[in-house]
Image (cartoon, rainbow, N blue to C red; front, side):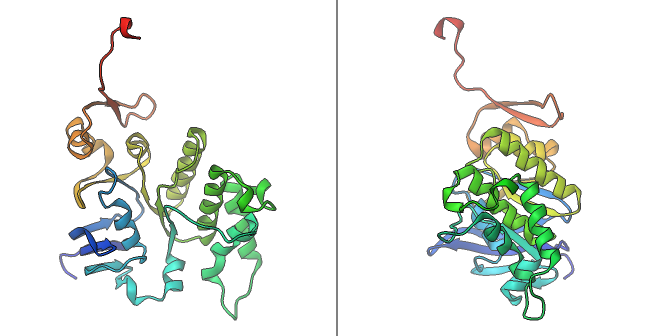
Length: 270
């Protein structure tokens, strides 16, 4: 494999799409081991399609997605699920299921006929619910929860999987700003604890603040990648999003912060 990426998870020259529509052609992306990688870009640029390919949900038309040195589709689904956790963009819970039972489904990849439910499984579920702030909801029906509460339940289920690689497609969807920051701080803690994370985010400032590695996509291609402080510029933001802006240091972290220019209004216009 000389000259090829050596990371645990990478895509090599993949052509991917869905519904007979090609989104990306000959795309190569390597997820740095131990990184908190965030994928950004405008709507329909291929972010979620790439994430689905990296998680084995879709098979590339050409090229390979490689996990731990093997083509990902050579593994059984349950084996992949012990290595890679996935929070998809939209999830549907079975009718009448309680929060604790849905979170417990994250332990399914670890279950076998010879290994029934154990104290370790229960501990993983309890810790995942505590980390996402849903312990008090454990006996509630998922159907009864708000959109933000349901999102935290799904995150807890993925955390309960306890995988070294975690892929999240727009994990802050439905969350208010306080819970968005709370979740991103939780993901940062997981990253600092040794997990490799890949997330699709819409908020560029959140991405620049929390990512250690940023991938900017447009029209199915990677336009730039690297540390946010190295690649987030006004020129890049306008190229990728078509948004005139200025980029200034975040007053808290010193990382890049994007300020849209918009239409300048005088005091008399307000």
